[in-house]
Image 1 (tube, each protein chain N blue to C red):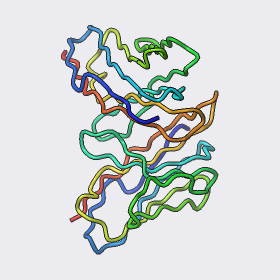
Image 2 (image 1 turned 90 degrees about the horizontal axis):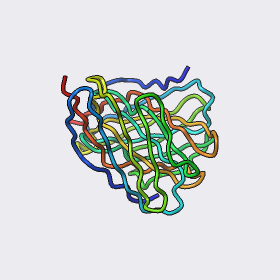
Image 3 (image 1 turned 60 degrees about the vertical axis):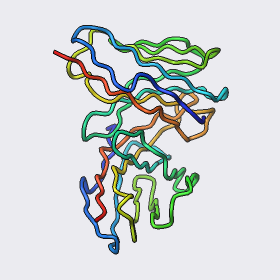
Length: 114
Length: 112
C-alpha cells in the first residue's frame, strides 16, 4: 500500500470559520509533510513532522496549526484564513531509503476561502 | 538546496517523439534529484529519481541524467504517449535533509 489519503477533497470556508484537513498513511513512514500549491506553481513546503515531532516550520502564519496525533495521521487546523490562502493543500509522507527520502503525495484538498 | 531552474515551462510534442526537460541547481551539497508527474486534479507522483553517485538512470521509457560538475539534470521521455501529458517537476534535496526544493514545472502536452 503506497497510498496517502486526504480528506476532504474540497473545502469552502469563510474567513471566520475553523476547519481541519486530515491526512493518513499506512506505509510506516515516520516523516510527514504539509505543502501548499497555488495554480501553475510548484508545491511550497509548510511543515515537516519527523517521528511525530515538528521538525520544520517554514515561517507559516499561525492561522495554520499542524498536529501529528500518531505516526499515521497528520492534521492541519485552519482558523481565520484569508482569501489568498485558497490553494491546493498537499500532504506527503516519506521513508528514508538508500541515503535519501522518497516522498509520496496525497491527492490534496482544494481549499477555497470566501 | 536553494534555487532550481526548470526549462521549458511548456512543451508540445507529437505522439511517439521524445521530450526532454532540463533543470539547473545551485547548491553543491545537493545529492538527491527526484522527478514528479502531476496530472490535473491529483498530487505529484514520483516517477524517477537519481542520486549524486550515479550519472544516469533509466526506467522503461523514462531516463534521467545528472551532470554534477555543471549542476544540471534532465528528464528524457521516449516514445511519448498521450497519457504522458501532465506537469512535470524536477526537485533536489541536500544530504539527509528532509526539505525538497522544486523546480517551476513543465507542462507537457503530447499531441495524438
